[in-house]
Amino acid sequence: MRLTRLLLAFCLCTSATPLLAADPVGVRKISVVSQDNLRPLAVTVWYPAAAAGAQSATAQDRIFEIPSASKDAEIRKGRFPLVLLSHGSGSRAEGMGWIAAKLAEAGFIVAGPNHPGTTSGDSTPAATPKIWERTGDISAVITALSGDPRWIASIDPARIGVLGFSLGGTTVLELAGARADLSGYIRYCAEHPDMMDCRWFAGGRGYAGGEQVAVEPLDLRTIDKTRFEQSNRDARITSVVAVDPGLATVFTPESLRNIDIPLTVINLGSIGKIPVAVLADKLEKQVPNASYAQVDNSDHFSFLPVCKQGAAEFLKSVGELDPICDDAGRPRIDIHEELVGLVTSAFERTLKASH
Picture 1 (cartoon, rainbow, N blue to C red):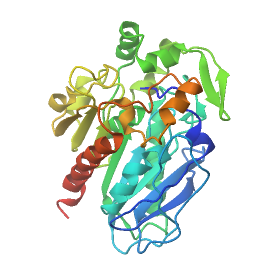
Picture 2 (cartoon, helix red, strand yellow):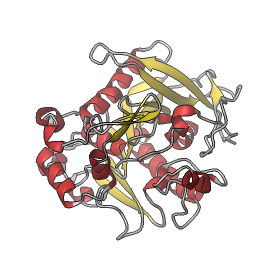
Picture 3 (tube, one colour):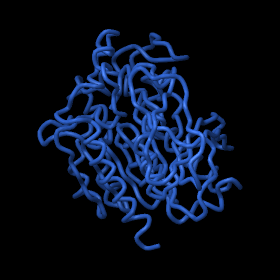
Picture 4 (spheres, rainbow, N blue to C red):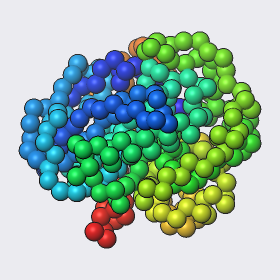
């Protein structure tokens, strides 16, 4: 699902506000390039820190509250599970920092790349369906961190999970072994042209260099069918959490039956109000080791960071059409607390329970 104009707030600046953590959290920026993927990936890593240090901070963000962490702090001694993040279309890894910091507090190393072509300020309809590039990004980060002397002693390679939101949810499901059907996706957009992802393909606009640009509308029939339907399974991944995953209704039944690792699926929204674009309740019955949770009085945008006071009015004043900061029925911070519980318990159960 497309986070349409998600301002270029993440593109232009990322703020930091104090986070009162039970355990200190470190944060580090790295760049990853692999033999198979020469696109440099900007990656943010959150991790359990040995002690609190200087808090990261950059320019003021007009829209979101972003938790701070200790920049380049020494990592706590021990071996920790690794959780990879895949952000939604038009967002970036820092937008998942609120939950990454909580996972780091709980004893996970968490790493998220900004996916080229579907990241804030660098996003086009033509790049959006190239899920194989996103899965390649995640696999490249796993390889890089697992072989990096700075991280190798701290990461347990037998305990690797992935957490994805929206298009990132599609990404992590494919990393688990789900395979999408292109004809099914074409049919879905023909039947639901008002869904956000379908509107994005037909809109004739994109973003490059932080600016909106005119592009050709995307005809889904031009997508490389072989690449779109290929298997992107990464056997190193042993646990998956997908929040509001896109393409949930067009994965092939056989590929879902063959997923052999724990899968937790979470939908944002009360029953009857979850958009068909991300409705994933049927996955619980289609995937052998799957569980499903649904978060009442929330919506798709509830997974974004907490908005600052006055942000909703500001967004409307600059022409933002999506209700990024609108009230979904209860405070976003309360929704986040519920999501932290669901996501953390899923990874505690699947990545820590047997160790």
